[in-house]
Length: 116
Length: 114
Image 1 (tube, rainbow over the protein chains, first blue to last red):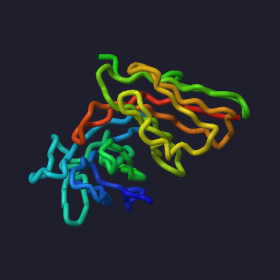
Image 2 (image 1 turned 90 degrees about the vertical axis):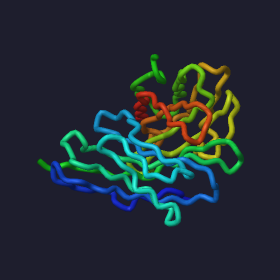
Image 3 (image 1 turned 180 degrees about the vertical axis):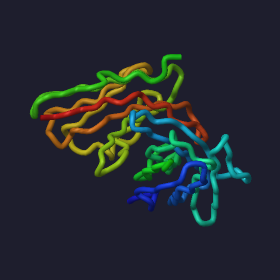
């Protein structure tokens, strides 16, 4: 069963504008981690930001912030002041473990295009 | 720190041939994950290991796929026999123990089965 949903297959944003990429997840674990990765056209996977299930503050890393709504099981990525180099695929991932061993699964991704 | 090392970077083979993909995780990492990425199916978790022991191989698509981790510094993913639908990018990733730990990805192996 799909456990991570990213409902926006493709997004466009004007350069210097902010953009929100959606991510919802499903888990019965109380302890889990949520991650966002960026994959540019070159193919490498780049870690952006992490949010723990017990963290009360939303995570921030430079221009990236995570809008974490635990009750809604959503972890949306906000990119402020978009740059042309932000054009890439963005994946939401969850680290959890039903059997006490950690498993990391990814959502289907959102393709972001930044328009000059 | 060399990071996660995968080889080969590119592999082109003919249907029916055996393919072996290799991965060297970061030293000291407890977890190793194998993923397959395609346009249609995204990033699929194939199998993962904890301290060299396979924990969950439910993502392995068929018996043609097998993975081993004989020691903490080496893992292989083997496809035998290969089929055109196996064409994809295969990523290896490693991480330390802990739900707050990010994955460190290798550069991936681009596999083309003709």
